[in-house]
Image (tube, rainbow, N blue to C red; front, top):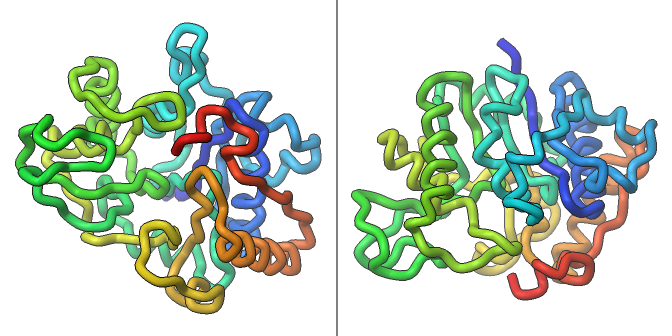
Amino acid sequence: MSIGVITIATKHAMYGRYAFNLAVSLRAISPTIPITVIADEVGLSHLDDYQRTVFDKIVTPELCDYHNGAKCTPLTLKYHLYKYSPYEHTIYVDADTIFTPMKKAEELFRSLKGIPFTIANRGEQDPSKGVSEWVESGSLDVPYWYDVSSEFIYFEKNRQAESVFKHALQFYKEGDLQTKIFAGDKPDEPFLMMGMIHCGIRPHQSPYKPSYWQFAEKGFKNAMQIKQEYNLFSMGGKFITRQMQNIYNELCRNVQYITGLQTFTVNHKKNVMPERRVI
């Protein structure tokens, strides 16, 4: 059984910096688990040849999988994760997450073994009251809906998982579902959820939050609480609060101490990415 982690770093060098830090954090907690990055040269432009060796595999995606004409659409690569993952059991995480140093990735894989496809989520929603912050209320007639977060996806090589990704891409391309704009494109979560519904798949657990994201939680946990309770810490969003930055910096120091590898500093996405100035 092959297991491994996969992430994406395209279009902006910031994502390559994040992906490097993510890979270092995995090396710190589970050095034998491989990590693959789906990346273009722009995404990895801040990494020298030695730094790139932190990844077990660098996969260059086909342009058609993340371009719409001349427009670069990195989010659409999530619909192709099944295609690009070299592993039988895959954990996908967004590049702007980082593994916490007190939980082993092996235990996370063991807890998910045998599940065809699942995704982080903040609970089930009532479709009659609106299904998503990205989708207008009443625009979908669906039997169920979950507030999913594609910053964490687990899947195994099987027909069910393959079908989820295939139909998510199909729904995205059909363009029937009108969504708000996110990062210069359509958000991927509504289409992944529609792919799950088409295949009759629900998250294996609801809510399921292996990653701590401050903006989705009430109150605030300190660094030690996050290390004890969560597998990952998320830096998602267009800007970084001071609390988030302090915790991320502490996690970076932790994994630097364990691995001897210097991590990158990161900045607000809205400062370097025009498409992230709004969301």
